Image (cartoon, rainbow, N blue to C red; front, side, top):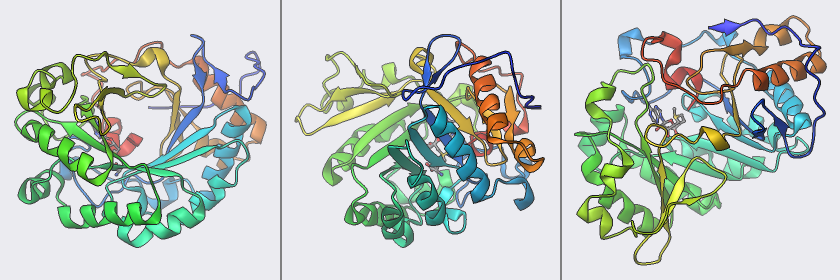
Amino acid sequence: MMVEAFPICFFEQVPSQAGFTDRFGRKLTYLRISVTDRCNMRCDYCRPSADAYKAESHAQILRYEEIERIASVAASLGVTKIRITGGEPLVRRDLPQLIEKLSNISGITDLALSTNATLLGKYADDLVKAGLHRINVSIDSLNTLRFRKLTGGELAPVLAGIQAAKEAGLTPIKLNTVLMRGINDDEVAGLIDFASDIGATIRFIELMPMKQGLNWEKHYISIDEILKRDDVKERVDVDTALQTGNTAARYLPMKDASGEVGFIMPMSERFCEGCNRLRLTADGGLRSCLPADNQLNLRDLLRSGGSDDDIRAVFLRSALIKPEIGTYDFDSDTEKRSMIHIGG
Ligand code: SAM
């Protein structure tokens, strides 16, 4: 559901260097920007079944100039961090050009990219030259056949892409693995070893019930259950209290002291209290909470001549309607509520 983005005059707020705040005092400093709802993989947990999924037409998707303008307004309100996501951002043509535009925006101090890494071998150097700071790579299995079945893609280019990113200096690299019972939950120890070997930090994410081709009830597994497993306890110091930072992930030290392992628990331990995020969908929806469907329409505002002040007012309104707690309503199972559509 796209809500009309009427400028609001009654909600005045003085922008500060440290972000603007919502009704619950949370400072909003982080904007995740989806640049496409297309992907060169077809992970079942991310999108509705292949037949049910339709990407937006190119005309519906924000142009780079439009994204740059929205990001500039966000920065003027105090947003300091931008993550580019999708779909798969690197399937969008000339992504380094957008990265360069965003890296030149005053106030943006952290510019990151989430990617499946398949095209990083081709683009890593250009992304660094354009001003990208760091990357997160999704990797859900190290088994070639399983990887293919799960993602519809190939593991080899992903590994080559991670290597290219390292060589290009896109470090520290973070790896993200969505945990799925009966699909890849037997690979936690192997993935921890892999991350340690390549000098990356791995984070395990609980499966969220978005609109997807995978049965959530059947495949959800909690981090708590994972931390009880012997092969995980051998590697990770599970007795240390989980460290919180200002991110969604909580970290535990590795037993051999070579680093830490992250756990993201959107289902078993909501991190809404510290949420500092807004999301911009590829088709120009401003969304202040991942599972809440009350997104505001920035694209139509821009294309009908809206001013920067009008855009700013939409950001403030988005903060105003950001729910205190994000709840996954299983009945509101609309097509557009898939991660590929919103931007992960
Ligand atoms: N294509 C890029 C990638 O592979 O990282 C960026 C987009 S992807 C949607 C971003 C993140 O969302 C990935 O880490 C993915 O694993 C996560 N994700 C997608 N659907 C999810 C779900 N149902 N539950 C938990 N995480 C999910």
